[in-house]
Length: 498
Length: 60
Image (cartoon, rainbow over all chains, first blue to last red; front, side, top):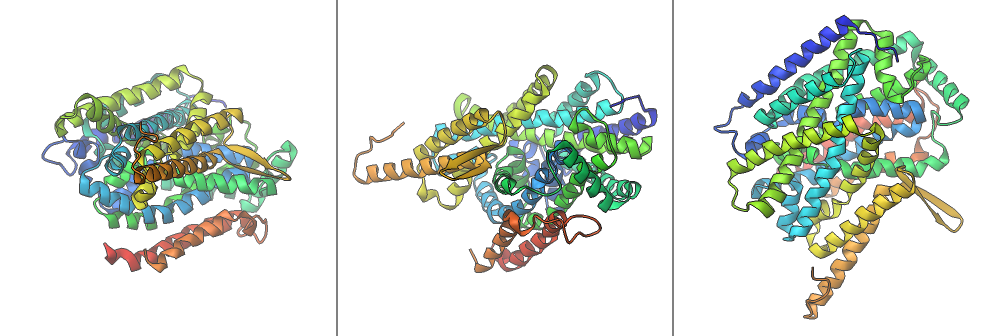
């Protein structure tokens, strides 16, 4: 991709970036608490975000910049198969509606800050708590790194060379997250989401007009996929199960991520979350329209070396510099919001479930906030090092594994909320070990593809590895819990005691 | 959990059973059925959740 420096685009980009930087620091005074030196304030914004703040925050948090780059890239490469993100982003909301208000109530009543806090309260086992917390942190790290990839893609498309702009952007992000906590991304999310809606709605009207309408776009994409001999604008029957299982598995995983749970726990009431389950699908419409950019890439005959460049290349091909700068700023700011919340979520986990659990059990709320702030710096610095010194593909593989890993906390966190009597801590921990290691092995075995094919006699089933690992996890968790329950009923407490 | 909550299962069935919608026609504004069918489940799902919400909100 040619990347000549576009002065107008860079100026518009820099102006919006400066605006959100100011907002990030001002946020410390927004809905000003008596003190920010409390983890509920720094890490959860005071736990009183109402319906609209939560809508902007979760929308800005879950629909990340990487999503807006990667979904069109996947559709560009594979066609209909890449669209699985859309059914995923729809069916997640009935689930959020059912599950998250219950989780919120438990967290609110007991002052829990993280998923591992909730699990530990249900199943008083430090090893299980640590497993849930560690899974959250290591699933989040590559996700933060991917936000940086999204940001780097637009910075380079602007014609800015080298890594310095990326490093500078990240240092600024780290500083205002440090000083304002969750209030910073919450306030910036208003700007980010508004910009993103404007950009997507303009692009999906203007580009199809230039390309002769959606009919012509899909026709051109169909031709391109046929010429390539891979992908298509409809699914092959062999893709039905992978498509549906990826959608279902991703749905179950999404709200287990620390950044999504942080948004949930920061909201003011259970009804805030219920209303958001009704209102958040508006962002899924945006995602669906963004996915169409992948097809537009074919119709526009873009010549790109990396499918992640579809969106920047389309913008540069059809829009003047000022709009391109605005759109690129939307994407870059779209990376800042989730990156900030992810680092806060990871920092909360470290503070509550490692520092407080193992290093300093008597830490004060102010001490917790201090530890969490410092941890958020370390987490972001780590993600930056990953991007600067490791191949991009490495972060993408880790992210793929991360989704599968976080899914393995589903039994302990979600089923533990609804049917705790089905499980014992030892059973959940054994299930987690099996799901985590088995899933990782399967992913490696399949060359880091998300799906695995099981052959059962004549038929073969291709399914999302995360779901297979979750099934194994659940089976082991139930079996071990059952055996232990029987053991304790017989008065022999020796079985499987760890 | 109230009976009305079972409505929440409908979007799962409608979207996870791919043979329901893996067709090109009828297209809408040139968009194949596969895509506009799935997109149309966005407002439908919101409506479904809203319907259930009105029944359960007073349950606390």
